Amino acid sequence: MTTKRDRTGVWYFVLQRISAVILAIYAVVLSVYFGLNTQWVSSDAGFALNVTYADWHSFFFALPMVILYVLTILAVVAHTWIGLWTVVTDYIRQTAFGEVTNLFRRVLLVVLALILILYLYLGLNILWK
Image 1 (cartoon, helix red, strand yellow):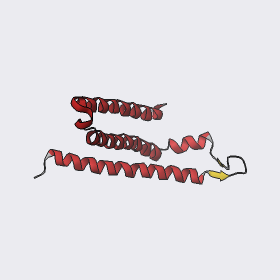
Image 2: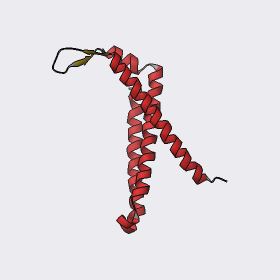
Image 3: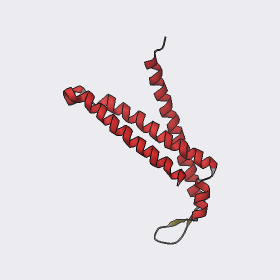
Image 4: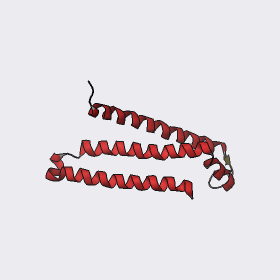
């Protein structure tokens, strides 16, 4: 019989992998877009994007890209939270920090949560500007 604790560990593992796939898809889509819209020119930089602001805007604000962007922002938050929560709970030991270990972990996780909430707000706020 599985307990809630067992399901949580598996759920975090699966969510971490799903978020990694979403991030990889977003990276591939952007790489293909840049690859198709980059031209080599003879200058000091060596290459230049052949994209106007209108092209850029129409690409990033197309419905499929907006959906992928929102999924990516959520995936970054989930991936970061799970990864850093694991690091904090696994590597901040009582042998190193003594009596204040639990307090230190909690403060660190609260700060991390606040940073991720700010990231989520700022990342999604771009869509409504």
